[in-house]
Amino acid sequence: MGITLAQAEQAIAAAKAKSTELGLKMNIAVVDAGANLVAFARQDGAWLGSVDISIKKAKTARFFDMNTGDLGQASQPGGSLYNIEHSNGGLITFPGGIPIKDATGEVIGGIGVSGSTVENDHAVAQAGVEGIK
Image 1 (cartoon, rainbow, N blue to C red):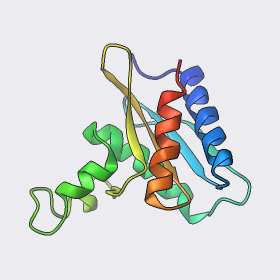
Image 2: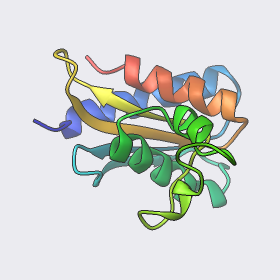
Image 3: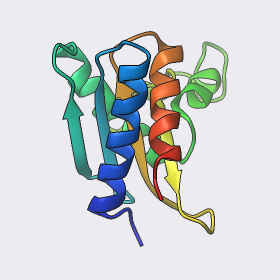
Image 4: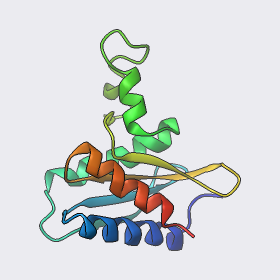
């Protein structure tokens, strides 16, 4: 089963709390197992350009069931996945996207966060994943 709206909203709430704690303004997207948008939040003042990036990070994490930063490592020049970011209508291959798994380890969705450094984006996305009950 894919992520529920209630779970997606929990992820958004936890990510927003972490973003606020860090003094950041983020765009946060959650997709289901089919990479369809389930929930989205744009904090007041978050960059407009990061809306699309956050959604693509969430989709990328689900398409490949791995953290977007890990995919980025494999897509560097000379890497086995070089230029993969041009597939699937455009992927994001830097940190801030994380697959969401259920208690059995099955991927049920993905979260993507954008609006700060990639380290902060990843930290806020991780808080979102951890916020799902």
